[in-house]
Length: 105
Image (cartoon, helix red, strand yellow):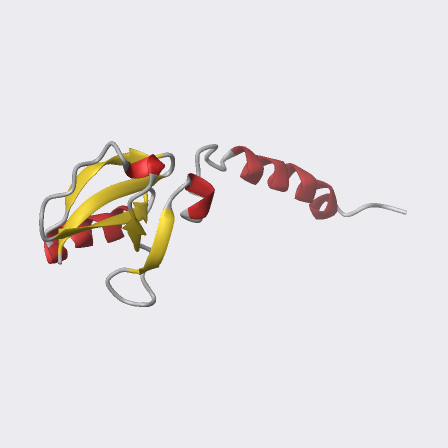
C-alpha cells in the first residue's frame, strides 16, 4: 500500500508554521493579574482600557487635578493612541503589562 506524499508533508508544513509564530505575541492579561484595581471600562463599556483606583501598584504616578487614572493593556497600542488623541491622555508609565495614563475628567 502506497502512502500519498501529501499525507507525509502535512507534519512538515505544520512544523514550519509553528516556527514562524512570534515568541512575544500579545496575550491579554486582566488588570487584577497586573495588581491593578479596575473600576469600569473607559471610555465606553466595550473598551479594553479601564478606569483605575489608585493603589500600591500605581502609587508612583502623580495624577494632575481634574484627571482620572486609566490603564490599557500595553499591546493595545491603538487604544492607547486613541486615549491620547481623543481624550487628551498622557502616558505616566507602565505596571507590568499595562500602560498607565491620566485623562481629563
